[in-house]
Image 1 (cartoon, rainbow, N blue to C red):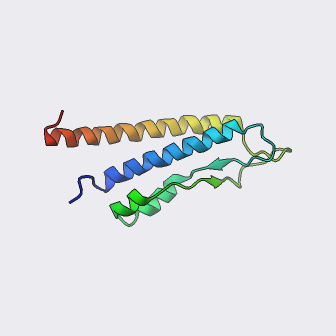
Image 2 (spheres, one colour):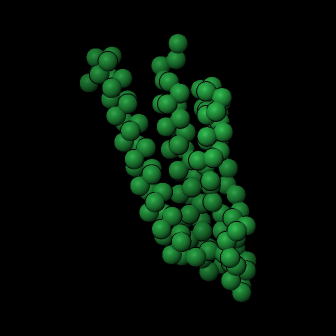
Length: 119
């Protein structure tokens, strides 16, 4: 029997995905004025949902978020497709998502610790 259930493992995977997305957003912001730079994203929710569909905790633990070039982002004349306002909004939304998942994960760990009599 595993100590962590599918939900716990999935929450940890969501943190990995959100962290990878934060790195992509940071790269986009750092390259906002780089000619030819294409915006990247980590659309991890669909990727994670696919990994979770099996219900296998090992598959979810092995899942790794993938960075993708955003081909739908409009390009400027210099070939760059990063919009600073879009990235700033994405950064704020991703930060809130990360914080929410981290709080839920902490609460679940606290429940486990309480059940084990660990303070």
